[in-house]
Image 1 (cartoon, rainbow, N blue to C red):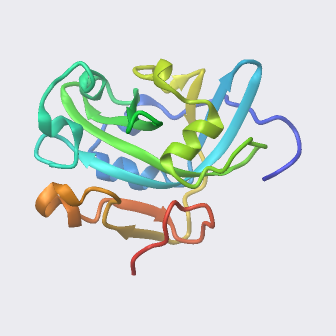
Image 2: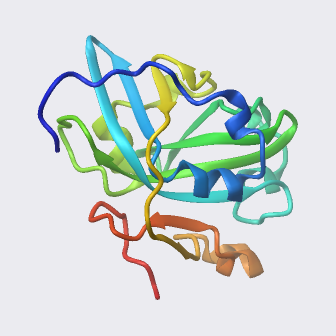
Amino acid sequence: MSAGPAPTCAVPLPRAFYARPADQVARALLGQRLCVEQGGRRSLARIVETEAYLGVEDLACHASRGLTPRTRTLYGPPGTAYVYLIYGLHHLFNVVALAEGEPHAVLVRAVEPLSELPARTDGPGRLTRALGIDLTHNGIDLSEPPISILPGDPPADVGVDRRIGVDYAGTWADAPLRFVDAASTHLSRPLAR
């Protein structure tokens, strides 16, 4: 964690950054900075692990089960937050990608703190807990507070692996759709390589 001046959340990534397939956005999000402003607190973290979910054909994607009240946000405009509750315990933060009506998303699996945070951030449920992200953030525009993604520096070494916890997804289970900053010590799980 770095000490110093309070982080700033100015100049978020433009909506056009997200308007491409989720696998491209997932890789491009590595090194970008996630900023959360709420309750008078501003938290900043560097994205170090993501997973891409590629729409209705991808059996690991929520969209493969069709449009439901839970997945409605997933079909929204690119650059929107898709937050859901899993196992009744953990909120997971995703970024909607591609185009409205095309349900692509990127799960942010781990971040590296750039400001002091109250808990670990090496997993999708841990990072939302540490940053205070919950269902109230579902559907918000990521180009303005309370959650925005800012430009950062891409990692020197990007690792690619299969996604975690999607063994039920048939041939999609082995798809190389998990992207990591291979030098980070904040990953949810090491690369399988």
